[in-house]
Amino acid sequence: MLYDYCIIGGGILGLATARDILRRTPDASVILIEKETMLACHQTGHNSGVIHAGVYYKPGSLKARLCKAGAEATRQYCTEHGIAFETRGKLIVATDAMELARMDKLAQTATENGIAFTTLSEAALREREPNISGLGALFVRDSGIVDYRQICVAMGTEIEKAGGTILLGHAVTQLRETADRVDIVAGQTRITARYVIACAGLQSDRLARQAGLDIDHQIIPFRGEYYDVSPEKRDIVHHMIYPVPDPALPFLGIHLTPTIHGELTLGPNAVLGLAREGYPKRSFDFDDALALATFPGFWNVAKNQWRSGLDEFANSIFKRRYLKACQKYCPGLELSDLVERPAGIRAQAVARDGTMAQDFLFNQSPRTLHVGNAPSPAATSAIPIAEMIVSKALESMAAR
Ligand SMILES: Cc1cc2nc3c(=O)[nH]c(=O)nc-3n(C[C@H](O)[C@H](O)[C@H](O)COP(=O)(O)OP(=O)(O)OC[C@H]3O[C@@H](n4cnc5c(N)ncnc54)[C@H](O)[C@@H]3O)c2cc1C
Image 1: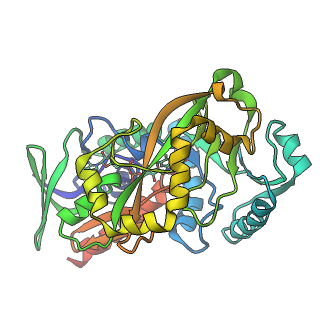
Image 2: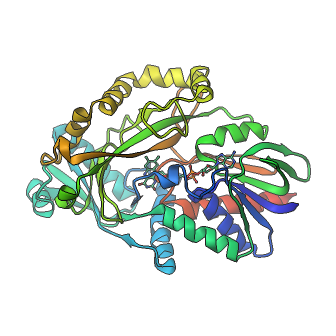
Image 3: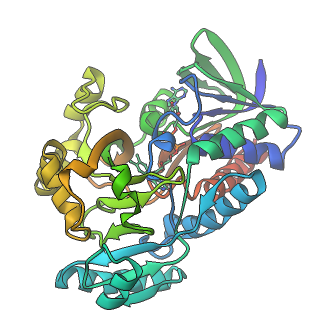
């Protein structure tokens, strides 16, 4: 069967993209192929559920621009589709003089990004969150919480209502681009499309290479391990509580996050994974580990980040150490309060020289577009990212 568009990946980006194509070109034939038997089984279904406001990101970057727009679009989408969300606000807490200085820099970035915030003194912080201790904090009013799986289910329904097809349980194993089409093999099924958009998360580099693109990066999986805070202590905080991030590191640090379902989670850390889709601790996949070991970018990251890598690894093994990172700002939590919760795995694109892609990244051939790097805040930003992807795809199609 010949489709106008084939989208690979049933995470939030693939779904938002298929939905946007059908909104902008209602007559187009669209198929979305997902290898799992359910939507949102990987990053989208294993994240912190935060609607980020857009504080952290380099001014002018896609992340900065699309996160702010995405937060607004996410709230609007949830309102229109009856999906629960809460705009509880986030506190970014500084616990020592160095973090206070970093917090001031973060405040500058937030200002440049047009994000509303209030700077809280130690006393004002304690008044807002009596169980949190710090020397000061940024209060970001517009940060919220949601269950991104519920958004995915709603988008899936919309796609099917608009005439799109969703094919679950079919892994794309071959992509062959010719002058006028792309031939796709997914399980036992063969499909042809005029244009392919791959939003394949942890497998995105493999699909791009299968399609013949000459890309420099590879996906390195970083596990994000979580704990649930025991029900008796779930009310210990009301807002999301984040540490001030270390600017040298790509992740935000272990945070306390209420979920929309009433839980309170602690995490995630950022530990190198030896299996891209292996969620239990110590998961190992031979092909994934071999891909890492033979990739110079991995060794360059290991050389540059070994100290923080060891730190994260130790936090992963020793729960008490993990807890200590959080007790810095929430001293009332105890070891017995933490119950293991399923991990998430981040797809982080890394170049051969070891540079971690900071911004969203896309790679294109005449008839394919591959999302190369879409880590946090890509769930928040999914709707405007999808609009951008679809504009690029429509331009490419118009040029044919
Ligand atoms: C621990 C963690 C915490 C995070 N917290 C937040 C947060 O609070 N807020 C936020 O905005 N962002 C957060 N993120 C980031 C966010 O979850 C991701 O950026 C977003 O989900 C990416 O969506 P995606 O559709 O690109 O990828 P995914 O959700 O990973 O979807 C990719 C899909 O492609 C499918 N696929 C792969 N290969 C094939 C193939 N060959 N054939 C068919 N299908 C294929 C996969 O099965 C998968 O379903 C977090 C991420 C993690 C891991």
